[in-house]
Length: 433
Ligand code: NAP
Ligand code: HSE
Image (cartoon, rainbow, N blue to C red; front, side, top):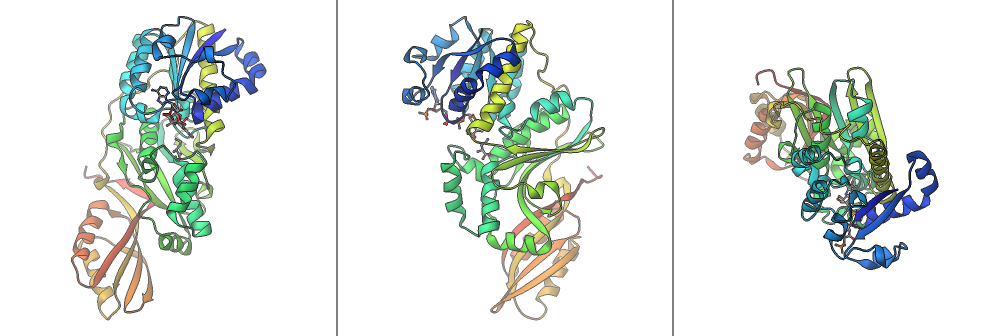
């Protein structure tokens, strides 16, 4: 019998309890042993009772679980940094393997946790921490291990994808759609980490570390959220043949330099990621042998996330039965340079409000020209005595664009720079680095 100590019986924890019960027979056959939740740590005992968890299984405190020598695996689903980190460290020191869905923790304390697992000869699995139910950590570490990975592009936050999808389909207000995503259990306890891009940044930090075998932490990821996206941007994207998505992008160039960033992007309507709607997530991977592949599914929610957690539990249970551990441990054996976003170049969409009178367009074009920013497409919509200018640039350096916008913001003919959004698929690291 493999005994579990479950920390947290909230959305995901309850899903794990339900799934282990629902598919008990098949899980036992596949594992070759019975997996049993022996003890649960949860602040709100009513959540446990509603799942049929017996009062005697509810731990008074963490030590009751850590000191129980019969417990083999700790499943941490309380979330946050502390006390989750301390609980995991103590569990590993007591020789217990750990499964978690906690991306906040891994993105910040990953290195310490991997080292701790290795020192204590235990396993540390975290499939559910990125893209919920979609298997991506194991495929990157195992199934794709023969490839040199060049690119990982994900839609890694269900809440923002849900909001952008509803905004583009129904034209509804941002706050109303966010409240709906919270009610459906997709959003984080503090939804600002969804909408400001932080949640996706944590996930791409984890994926890029694995894909490129180098430690990428949250501080290395450039982050922009979706709060600046307005219905007008979505409309113009559609008019120009694009879709707006919050993308998490990680790439390694030929010189071994790594970039990791999260920001809204225009992607062509024909790109496979453009069809990923609602709360769905997808991870697009390019490997030198496999080519391009896309993993698609539910990136959040109770049962999809529980699916990934239970998969990890089964794998560790099998390791315990064969008396092995550390088969798939930390893969960050290199130390690669991280490229600053200012050193990249890309095509950009720019929406600005300007005075509608002769010479204005020429003045604006002049500023761009003086800063090496070349314009590919221009659309103009008149709004009274002002005009909305929509421009798509050719591939330009981030720094050159920033310099042009700084000049434009100071010009009396420019009312407002409403938004600037990158087009995906057009960036490259400058050779002068
Ligand atoms: P949740 O619904 O808030 O569940 C966490 C549970 O743990 C709550 O019942 C909470 O009780 C309890 N808890 C917190 N601290 C505790 C402590 N010190 N001692 C005992 N109980 C404690 O969160 P969740 O959505 O299940 O998320 C759990 C983890 O999975 C997080 O790391 C999250 O990022 C990750 N995750 C979630 C999803 C998803 O779709 N929800 C998807 C992927 C990954 P109180 O509510 O009373 O504080
Ligand atoms: N808040 C996250 C999302 C949940 O919306 O994708 C999964 O990590």
